[in-house]
Amino acid sequence: MKYFSFLFLFIYSTITFSQNEYETFINKYEEFAFYAKPDKNNILSKYFSKRIHSDLLSHYKINDTIKTKKFVYLTFKIDPQNKITNIIVNSPYSELNKNIREAFINYNIEDLNIPEKNQLNTYTLQILSTEGDKMIINCSTNVVFDKLPVFEGCESAVNKTKLSNCLLNKISEHVANNISSVEIKKAKVLGSLNLRVKFSVNEQGEIEQVNCKAPTDSLTKELNRVVAIFPKAKIPATRNGNPTSFVYEKTISLEIESDNEKYKEEVNQYQESFLNVSDEFLNQNTELALHFKKYISVEELDKILLLKAPISIYFNIDKKGKPINFRTNAYTSELNDKLIGVFKKFPFEKLNIKPVNSIDSYGYPIIINRFNKNIIVSSDKPSVHTPPVFDKDCESSNSKELYDCMNQSIKNLVVNNFKRTIRNKTKLVGVINIRFSFQIDDKGKIINVKAFAPNAEICNELEQIIKNIPDVYKPAYLNGNAIITTRKYSFGFNVGNNIIDDFKNLRKTHGPKSHF
Image (cartoon, rainbow, N blue to C red; front, side, top):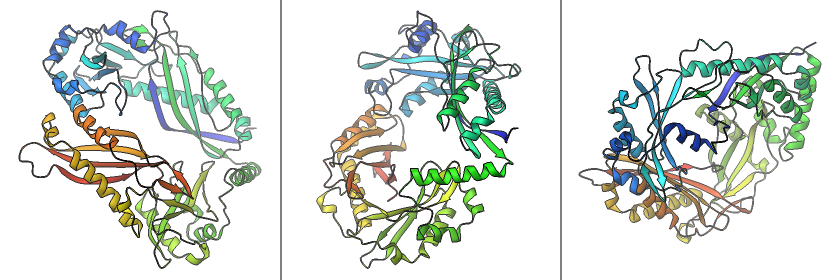
């Protein structure tokens, strides 16, 4: 007798083309080049050579901090009127992408000699490639067009989106209908069950290289078995009309339901024991946790959307020993206000916190998710976070002054060292957004610098400024141990005529684990 019924939901899916296993192809780039036949001197290369601004290429970093790219591709689709649509360029620089898109829009589609105009296809052109340490114009001679595999029941799909959605439906239905209820029972699951499905479809349309993931080893094995018997494609994926292999990867969610009360009780007991084992520092019965349970109902708890990280409350303590600057990492202002309001009703002296440093922040986890169930918990002691001290002059009597001092120091370094002539290196005008991030390691050194700007020259300039920032006076600490922290900033850089103030509104954005 089956204990369960399954409903499937789609959370996230990615579809990528793997390349033919033909012996002549070493990798995906070689297969693409086989069909595209890029040539620096063909008609398309000559066309783009006259329209891509040379200064956008001369400073292109091959080992870019944003993302290493040896090739720049342009992809597009064809609409029902055989017009080009959905043009995407994959370089890390928005000004270069805009330049390429605008040039391509004015190109005569008939000159591409597309052999098959079909809404089911995705079309790709190589535009740039590396030559030594330079990025050069080296365009495709032929358009490369890819089509997804077609499985039974999806033959009537009229475009790529509908074909992709059909495949998503088919694999989800197949998993829901064939996964073993016995293995579900062993895994002690109720509610949402997230499953990562990954497999290849070879040139004959057969399923192979199945590599799925589930919460337990036995359920992973069962999922692999189920996916391996997914019916072969009626038509394999194709590249320029020829069969090619295809990699499919997605995450689906099964809603596990049961009318068996004994099983429900077993699941609850298992989940509670797992919580106690895997999160020894968390407790559902601390005074703080019990306090929150008085004000947050089970119904309210079930409606809260949780990511992987727990929802926590953070605060500072003033010189008089009173909590101040309350905040949470809740995803809505309503939940944030609710949690802060409940926390303020708790007798603070019961937490028995002995503040040592006025710049420290304190945090307690409040809500976590285990087995897709929201649970109110807390810890006996708070986590204590000491922010980095940028330089000795930033040492202050409270956390806000320290925070403001570091942000102002960063702003001064960027603004004072940025070359004003850099604004002449872009065709864009007005305020353009520039971002950068870096980490401060446990020794206070600046590491992992990343800069984001519309073109390579501005990006390189910004990156070099950040790399030249001296070591900070003191690194951050968590519970007395030096830790790595991430800092992220963005600002508007004014370009164009009649510039009065180059920089506008430096903004600090929090990095991971920086809710303190």
